Image: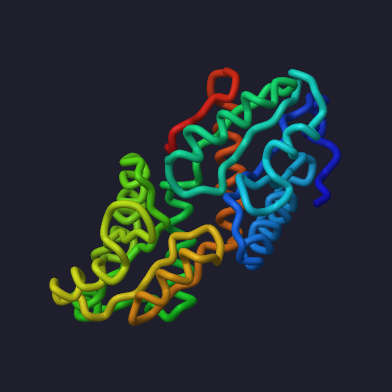
Length: 263
């Protein structure tokens, strides 16, 4: 992929670190197309910033290759922005290890995308696109609920982050939102849907808390009988959030391969 060749802010004369979007990688070609579109939207929002895309596995270019290709020097360096929705092994271990291995660069690791109110905006938009009513009445709300389908992780902090997003979305919609997971501990999609039904919430929808289409998103949709929203995808809100995470990482105290918790 091509990227902007200049990372200097107009009028400042000072180089800015490259933004390296880090996707997980997927065998589903829709996932690769999605993150490429998202990278393009990030570039469009900040055309004077060098924006690159790397993958943890399964797709090229792999993150170590992207970092190795960046020019050496401590004045600019790079900020790794994970296109991941919670804390977990990749954010805590894989990305800092890749950053440390790129010894020629001054590198930071930003917080994952979630939780954040901008993600709730995107989830709401996707639900609306799938048929969620714009202004449900009180009677509708008493019968409705949402399952928030996420990838899952053995890291307990990942579940904390997903639960926080569920709480933010519940506040936005005015209905219960139960997290469900495609892998790792925690309830699956079908179990979360049954839990909503047991509370009288028979009009449920599935919010797909996945960055892009892929195996987990497909499995979650298959396990759910009802309205299914699309994954977050290349929504403009994700481009805004990626740049917010980049800017937040730059404002934090300097340190090699610094990892930031969501805020």
